[in-house]
Image 1: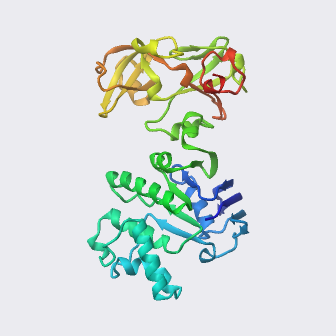
Image 2: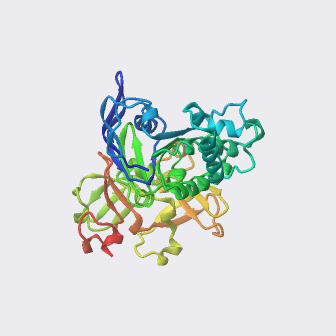
Image 3: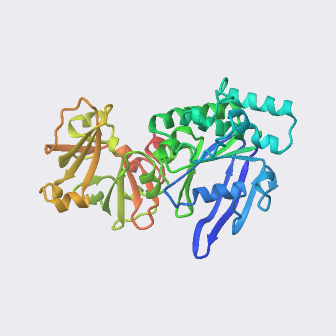
Length: 393
């Protein structure tokens, strides 16, 4: 096991900057996930750790060693990729042991390591099978076992579950968590799937356009996003965003107002443009406002589209100015909110409803920079600037 440290890693390809001054420290034995949209720099950052690409600027440390100029084979890392790349003419034993045999390990040591790895990933009794006789999940476990036998200091996994079906991906997420718990090794995992990042990681590093946006435990990124990008990317479905202005008694948007003391919003003054963010589960039908500690005033709306999901219903609601039924208003998705309600809620499409927002879960962002200003707008007069509702309580 080893800790990994990245110091000001930058990677340029001609006039394109794939990774832009990324620094972080990954603890010994930590499971950390690099997550972000396609092209955000997450795979390039991992390749810098692996030695598959040399950074234009910056240093990579594994343990106390500067490995920036070392070849991949000398870094003590093992890699698992989206393309499993098993040798089709070799059985499972031969696939797992291939790297060890190339390095001239003696037969007894090879057998010991292969059997140990097969036990860890639950491949007992399958070592004589050919790859085409196995399921996708079993083949992925062979690829992981092939990495385990090297006894690496760091595991690097680049979207290893992307080619599996949805049900198998969920199963393999559990398997990888169990594997990390058993091996107690450092794992760097790359994915564009924020659900994978949220469920498996000790911490997640959110990247966008080559820049590190936030690195924190999953629930911190969810409940206290550093900026609008993180707030919109982490969480499914995405957070609702409404543009507004900070006024003397709170925030006023095109269709509704939320009242609070604006003097306690750090980094903002009356007249500033503000983006209000609220997650679908924090939008409620006004009849249930009594169950909320800090409900906003009710907002007039009309239900548009309902999406029953089994354990919840997603309800798209149109605020007053978008309820004229015109195609333009619906296609632009302006003044639309997504609400999540219980599956036993009596609600239908094209129904007039009053909704409220949970004030303790509202987020405010600077409309210009996208940086988070405050998380939770309860009675701000009672707490210090920059604190969350939870911290104040």
